[in-house]
Length: 324
Image 1 (spheres, rainbow, N blue to C red):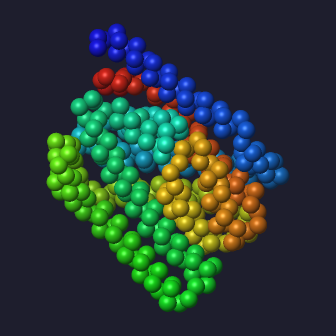
Image 2: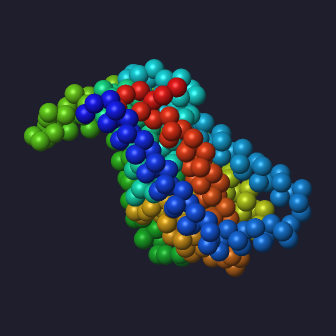
Image 3: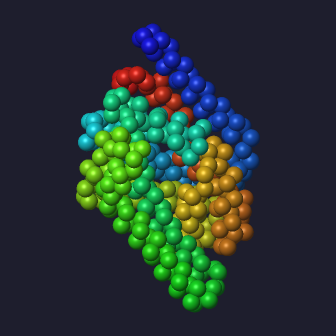
């Protein structure tokens, strides 16, 4: 393929990505009852309070994705040195790809195309390490919160509670042990016959030492806490009678359940709202407010960054480095 053909194909891919992203965004925002409900609820509250809360949540969104950019830069530092700004660009670009792909798999492609071609496959593997850190935080804190939720609301037999507690501790221990010994994955994959030819890519798993895994986990935990603060600010603003402990516990359970469901970012807002309202029904009857809060966070954390990231899609060079 000559340079002219590559250029035409590159432009075609960019147009397709932007077209799909904006079509999905338009479809979901043009007829979203939960967003409409959220706006209606805000009109009933103090304008000053609305401004303070919403500004705080939006600023936390930028902090959240900035931390993710720092994590991405750290993950690939052994592969290719990238600037902090380039890491930010790649993260937001990935979010644009994510909105119309199942389980946000497009986010991987959106990021690694900012790396040089020979580093992209290993960049995917490095990104999977970051995803594992997120998985550990979500599953460990989520399963512990689920146990607390069951103890608080299910009233099961004490022996059942004990057995469940043991299972959850084993479940958490497995995630933690596997995460901090991620090099085991390299040893396992290189023994699988049809994967042996790819072992030069999988070797990246063995490059992350204990200190690296701790730092990556801290990045993921920081983002997790920021998400929680965002949800807390909006839900507490709309439904102030919910106790802080109950809210945080249910949010952790919500993340845990949500992470296990296959989804399309632009289509799973209904699923998110349904999961959240089911669990929050144990502590409040304000179903509309909860659904509205979930929709608001979804829009702020995913839709706004995806729109912002469309700027960086134009900088991609699929057959070489991203343009400057």
